[in-house]
Length: 215
Image (cartoon, rainbow, N blue to C red):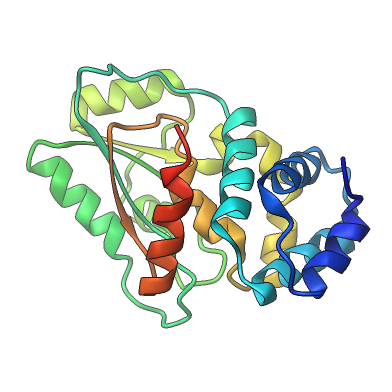
């Protein structure tokens, strides 16, 4: 990569952006487990303190999409992901999950992408498991659940196996990181529509700017 992980850390600690290409390569190396966990935690913390740029988020998201297990949906069928960043620290109700289930009951096909809680009381997967709702384990399950129930939950660890190297680091940090932003942007099914929730207007604008440069 053009900069080593240590050099990127120095750049972030100087409150400078690293750009989309460096973010892409860094995300790839984090996913491969090349970056030592203490350094990975320092990088995520430094990026959080500096504040993520749209270009950095886009680079991370592109890398995550490229190593995800793809899910092919009918492009003629309207589908939506209803998802939020979480990580607001307010222990608020999981609104995106309730909204997704209500929308599916009303006839909209919802391909929701999410995970367990990392920095809040309950993530979408925690809520759905408590309700006895199946978490889709592969692409075939997603298609079947959508056809049968208008709702499929793409449990992130099943579709982003490369993220297994990052999950323990996120859990140990216990704070909002760039991955709270990436979850809503990296649905492997790439539905036709998104309803995205963010914990602040600034974060909503950041996500919109990141998405505007992605396919």
